[in-house]
Image 1 (cartoon, rainbow, N blue to C red):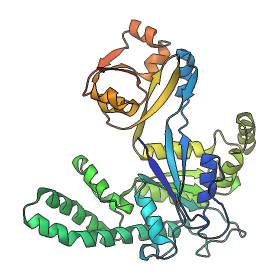
Image 2 (image 1 turned 120 degrees about the vertical axis):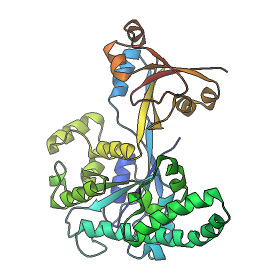
Image 3 (image 1 turned 90 degrees about the vertical axis):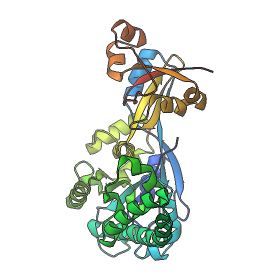
Image 4 (image 1 turned 30 degrees about the vertical axis):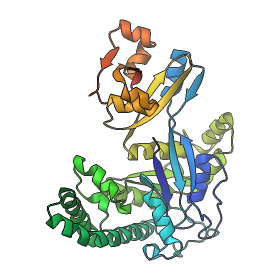
Length: 365
């Protein structure tokens, strides 16, 4: 099960630098001119989770395997992208294939790094990108609506449901508001995802600040954080320059570097965790002598479907999930202690996986 978070923003805001640091590669060319990223670059990154090492130590595991998240570096959008300006159509298609957006916003001043609009104004930059996404969605929905209206008049149930949701989104878009602000019922989630709306995707604002502001941000990042709060979105502060330097260091050197610049952990850890949370994902674990492993599922996933993430046969033949909460596993020093303490549970097909569950699935082959 793959989850993609697309890195977007105007040219020269630090997208490719951030991507390179995330993946610890130089796959994306970071250069000081627009459109240096012609094709989207994709990189899988481990989701930092200190619980893994603790579980592995208790289970005496030989190997630790973290869960992963995919980041896609998408070339910079410019004003008019929805009409094909720059490499707009290609970029918009790449965003549509992602599950969430990490919107990198330039929150630093540097006369040596050109700004495509000629000024540092992060809220205006956000508006530029958001407007292009909304215009693309508006055009897409207005093209679909007439055909759906005809089908709905014939009594087609699916067309009626789609038309109601599309009308709701169109009202927002025509007011200059993103589709993610639409009230979407649980039963409509699958339907709105099928529409492929760019502005309906959850967004994480990544405030790229100068090195001196990496710990607490600056006036620009505070303005972005305030906007994120109004939208029920998320925002994190990083210095892409610092992160790119940290990514090249060994573990011990990283600790020394972070200490020297006054940071407790790499900013990328916050970006990854925020992206994970943005997608409403949770982690469950399997632990044993061979390996301790983290697995990713969406919130609300039931036990059989979680078993299917490990192997499709586990879902087909699901019998039960032997379950221990992470805190109980640690407090009882493993499975045997949890059993003795009455913290070992047998859960059936309707059980919804909780974050941190340590699971062993029983299934009929």
